[in-house]
Image 1 (cartoon, rainbow, N blue to C red):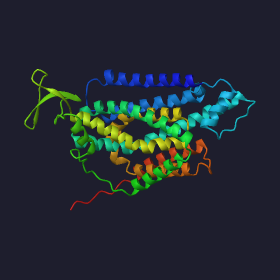
Image 2: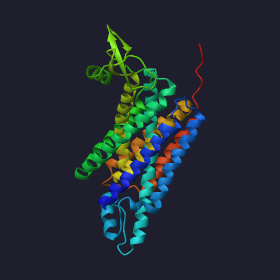
Image 3: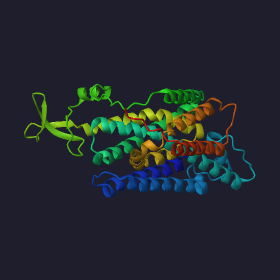
Image 4: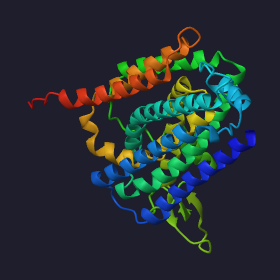
Length: 362
């Protein structure tokens, strides 16, 4: 069973990385500014791909864990879905019950990650604006940011699973963290103040370890340059040029830092829906790979969904309370999915019908 999980995991990662490489090296090889129409089409494609994977889990979800008999099913259920009531004399019925529960929790976690990613996307937009990155280079940075996010989520999810298996009380800490962040988001004031790039600890640390070329150089992360007095100029190796990192690379570093910060919300939230690390990982990755297209879509219509932030707060409060009370109250996976989808839909509807009043000019 363990070997089957590893094989399925490798196939899944290979498929995702393959799709991303084709996207990066073939489809989007030429840098260009993405239109809302193009972003909308690709967002629909990635969402359709995620739901197709959900359809696969509905009919063949047992393949993930290599379930072949009632003993395997009982063991997997004990670890990841102990609330399911299995009939030991009905293997096929129990298998269908497990598949359907797996699919519903996957979809719930996917919708959660998509919703919680909205704030992350706005932070990315702020980072791009602060660094003065050309809109043509947004795709290039986001592609590498997504690849880095896949690695980071893998570490966070499977380390988190190991910790939860040993220390169940960590779920309580996750719950408190989510409730705290919900209250913080609700009461913090919106600001468009730029990030203080020069004094940020990441930049100061990078400056001590690496040479930083002060200007963009096309879509390059690294460039050979020679320092004369306080100025850097591009130079070949024979001219004394040494490798320097460009502001575009620092932008990728900031994007990864942003993902780490937001993972402290999304990973605990996903564990509130399912304790199966593979379900959490699949849902997170399929949500993340569609973030690039979603970023360009939201960047063009960001002012139309002003109440989505309040929906995020409600969801964080809901799943935080769910984690805190998981020993006392069992919320069915179908109801969790209904709440998540309902809050998301209501936030969008309210945003569309209750638009902000225009400010009168003095």
